[in-house]
Each structure stands twice: as structure tokens, then as C-alpha cells.
Amino acid sequence: MKVLVTGNKGYVGSVITEELSKQGFDVLGLDVGFFPKGFVESKYDVGTISKDIRDIETKDIEDCNAVIHLAGL
Image (cartoon, rainbow, N blue to C red; front, side):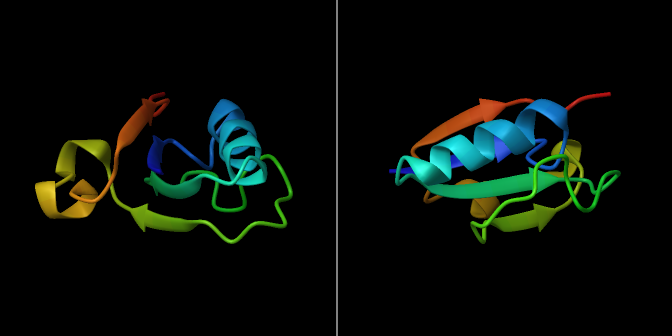
């Protein structure tokens, strides 16, 4: 199952991304990049779309099965 996590480099998003990866989910992140390193040092290589959620296009997420929306300031 492929899960999109918006805000995956933020405080909560980085923890959720790490946990989902540990559990074997295929995780894709979407983050504008205000915190480029994230808040959790991860040993998992998660692909990240670097764009604002307001600019997302259907083709960006067409193969995702679920979305966890955590983006926002």
C-alpha cells in the first residue's frame, strides 16, 4: 500500500513517516521544505515531492492508496 504523507518533514509528519516505513508501507512525502532535514533522523529513504500542497496535481498522487494530511503552518 502506498501512503502519501503531506508535511512529511514537519514535526508530526517526520515521526509518522518513520513509523509507516518501519511497518513496511511504501511512503511518499509531499513537503514545501521549510525544514529540509525533518525532525527525526530516518534510516529510511522516502521519496519526497518538493512542492506546496496548493500546487499538487493528480499525476503527483495517482498511485497512492491513502493520504495522511499533516501539512500546514
